[in-house]
Image (cartoon, rainbow, N blue to C red):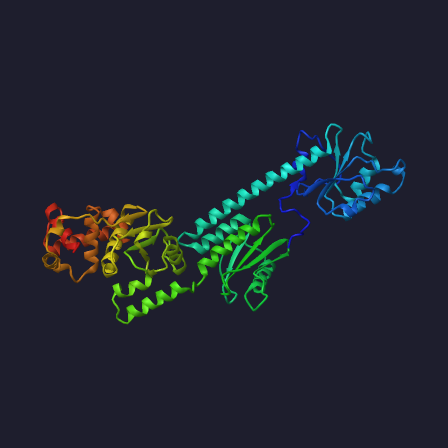
Length: 487
């Protein structure tokens, strides 16, 4: 835990204060360390300031306390030793009105005890130095807040990607400049991102994860440690499920804990099992469907109203259960199914997707009653195929009234069945012909939509033309086939 005496603001680099031209400060003794920082400025003319220092200060003095014979004795050695013992970060000595120059014995003592000694010129007041310190602290605080806010936004965006867990870990590792690891309930490393760490730090981080893993009352939810120059932190995820987030970084900035905590919350949502009343209702609905219940009878357990079916496919990798769950959360529905390379989500109509989801292609059905879920599922599949073929992030089913509606459904279905009978035993041919016609005969876009080579599309369409004994270049033939394929 941080020292409570240190203020909750980022420290100020001593070099930044020395760079202020309006102050004209000059370091005349002690080590020149670019990493040296100060937490505040304090003025004291006490001969022994030790009891009044908290550590990390730039102590300012005009030397009022210095006796006339100090240069020939051990006064300055004792004075500087006490400042160093109290944790003072630097000493600022004001030239005038008491002293014309900085005493040489003080310079020697600061060199001996490795305490930076700053000469404050006559035109610079101590209050001006203190004000500059606070201005630099305010700037650092604002920069840190911006950094944390940006990190929160990037982490939230990462959580909505098709690969949410690796994406969140990558963002976290990038923000802290180290490595982020997700440990499973058994303590195994499930996923990791960022730069590698030495074996000693890796083992220490795994041990630290065990400290926060739920083991009974009083188990901490977070813990920190340092080893081999590496700062380690572990955060328990969820409500006692055993997942742990581990972070290893070469340095620990003031906002790193906040950033890691945001990542821990997101990972808790992504890895958690939500046990609630709605979860029980979903389980009950599933059991009733398995036991022969009709959709319209079990839909009341999920909430009354109309629904849309969403088919989604990620732009890159095959979706997994975590990615599907994250997409469902983004769409506002826990009713998610992963089937091969497509994720299907049943969404209440009032939550119909209004904007695309980054990294996904979406096909959305018309809003339907539960009894028409199967029809909506087909609509969403066709919309997704068109979205992928046209490289559109979101395509909705077009539910406008058409001329086909003027034909009696039974007659239309009988005509379609008879017309397409030669292809009835080949779902691949039917799917290829439907997609090819929907994309106006484009070989390339059909190949993209079906994830096959364009030559395969040509061969299948040619085979369809032969089996149907039809001229597929004739627009009337295409129209009739499209009418049949939609039935």
